[in-house]
Every structure is written in C-alpha cells, then in structure tokens.
Image (cartoon, rainbow, N blue to C red):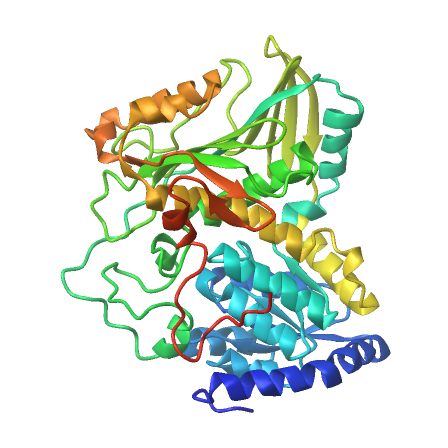
Length: 484
C-alpha cells in the first residue's frame, strides 16, 4: 500500500515497474482461478450500477472499492465484502486486483485509467473518456503500450440491434442515401442552486483526492456530488454526459466509424433561465460537418415552459415522433429514428415501415469486457478505447466551440452551413426560450472552427484560442503523463 501523499513520480515509477511484472500474471491468475478480481474506482450512482453489472458476470468478484468519500466507499465495499479506501492508488498497488472499473468524476477518468494501465490492470472506463481531448489520446497510448484490455462504457455498442441497424441503413439501403443526421438530447433538469458562500466540503471527503487533476476552485453549487457535471473544471456538461452516447451511436450506425472527427464545427448556446452556479450550457446546439454528410446537434435541459413537466421537443417531421435522447437519420426515402433500446424507420410520408428492439446492454457490455480480459485480447472488445476517444472528442469539440463563443450572431450562425435543417434548428432553439422570457441575445455563438483530425488540433481562424481548451493545466501530483 502507498500513502495518499506519495509523490506522483514515485508512484508512476512503481506502476511502470508493475506493468511488466504484473500484467501477464494477472491474466494468468484470472484464467487459472476462473475468477476475475475487479475494483470499482468511484462509488457514486454509476459506480453502483457497474458494480452490480460486473458482480453478476460469472467468475467475477468485486474485491476493492475506492472513493474520496469514505462513507460511499465503505457502503459499497460492504455490499461485496470488499476492501474500501479513499485513495485509488492503494487499489492500483494491490496485486489482488486484476481489473478496474473507472466510475470517478469525469476529470479523473484519464489519469485513473493511465495509472491503472501502468500498474498492470485492465481498464473499463466510463464515458466520456476524457475531460480534454489531449488527455484522451494519452489513454489510447497507455493502452497500446501496456498490451492490456481497455474499453469505454458506451454500452450501446454491445447491443445486437446495432448490427441490424447498420445492415438496414447501409447494406439494404432501404431508405436510400443519407442526407444528414440530427442528434437530440432533450431532457429536462433542474437548477443546481447558487450559494453566497463557498460550499463546505463534507468531512467524510478527502478533498485533495476528490479534486485530483482539477483546479482548486471555490464551489458555489449546493451539492458536491453529481452536480460536478455542470462545472467545466470537473465535468463536460450534458454534451459529455448524455451527448456522447448519442454521438457514439451515430458514429457507429450511421457513419460506421468511417469518420473519426468532424472537419468543421459551429455551436451556440447558454445557461439560461436558472440563475444557478452551473457553467455548462443547458441549451446547446451545433453543426458538425464531415467528409460525407453533416450532423446537427440539439440539446436542451429546459422543459417546454416554466412549471410544465416533460421535455422540450425538436420535431423534424409531424408524423414520425421525436427521440428525446436519440437521433434521426434523414434519408432520400424516409427517416430512421434511433434511441437506446429501440428504433423505428418511416417512409417520407411518416408511415412506419420497420421497428427494432435492443437487448439488456449494460450486462452485455460488462460481459464483453470480461471475455476480452480472459483472452487478453482487446480485439474482442465491442468498442476500442480509440473509438471511445473519438466519440468523446465530438462532444469535446462542441464544448470548445461554446467556450470560445462570444456575442450571439444569428446571421453568422445561419451562414455557417448551407443546410435547411440547421436553419430550422436555430429557429427552434430560439423559440424554446420565449416561455422563459429569455432572448437569444443572452446566448453565445462561435465562429466556424476547423479541426484537423490527423493532428487533433484546430487550424485556421481562432485556432490558437480553441487549442487552449484541448489540454488543461494539472495540479501538482496529478498530472496526466505525456505519452505521445
């Protein structure tokens, strides 16, 4: 075991030494004993869900739980007769751990994954992979160097329905050529409050460990846990929280992973109507252009009107319904509406022509990871860590476009793309603000940003400003190592 205050360099040296000695024995032990020993890093709600999923896979035992909140760590550990610690580095030193499931706050995903790989542990890391695009690439490099199995929790990749969808859209070409895609994340949320004095961190939380790579900034929201999603210091907003699932679906079933990253991105949005301490937008829309066809993104956490239950809608066709958290593929011969666990195809008149039903994806995804670990074969994974890096990257680029944005410029937004669907979406997103007494002028919009997928950097106008968001400054002792 190591002390929580152990210098990072000493830990990495230890981890690198362990990688050579421990990775193959870990696989051998798992095969010989028919037991894979898994640790959960992050004991929040998602950590609990993943612990249950892995515990139900035959031959898997939860042996350790790490969370900076000692109460949460102990509660989950007690459920599985596992050991508990506030410091994930203790778990990574433990020779009795074969694999880790990273369900920490988003800002910890990459560093925890890299440290685990360097310590000889296989890694299942929750989405989004990265808090910034540069650190996601370092995880990909760490996985390649280690020779271990590393995947991401975009669990819809394990749904057998996805293969049927790809065949329907691309092999059968039932709906004809694809014109564009609209991604929707339209789910109402509540404000997170705004304190006049910084939040007092609960005594049970080892706050230095909770912060890890993030900056030590005062917190003015009401709750420490979960609402970190809506602070750019620790989270990726709704775009990285739910948007990554939808955009990964689109990359998989619609682009068939042929497009790594968008070539151009323009976005607009804001955090409006709530007056809370959140930083990330609760209204966010974007146009992503690729080598083939474009994708437009519609995101809103607002209800239809103040005090009204339900979520705001962004209709494309009056008869085809509206996937609130899903996507619509607009084709020459009809529409394909996909969302988690189900999908429906319509002709151009809105008549349903086929439906699809999915499987129980979380257990399937966990079982796929375990099977790959047992064979020590990352090629068995339903989603590679590099694929997860790209899907997370679409969200990161949209967030960057928002962050570099300035005063709302409707004319420039509409001129950014010659696509009627983009103009319609801009109009819809403006109209949803009216019941809240919010003017579009309270939003911000970006210029068109050009991205080079080979260098993973922006080029052209405002590139210097946008590139500043590709990599963050890390606190001492919690730096993500530069591996490429």
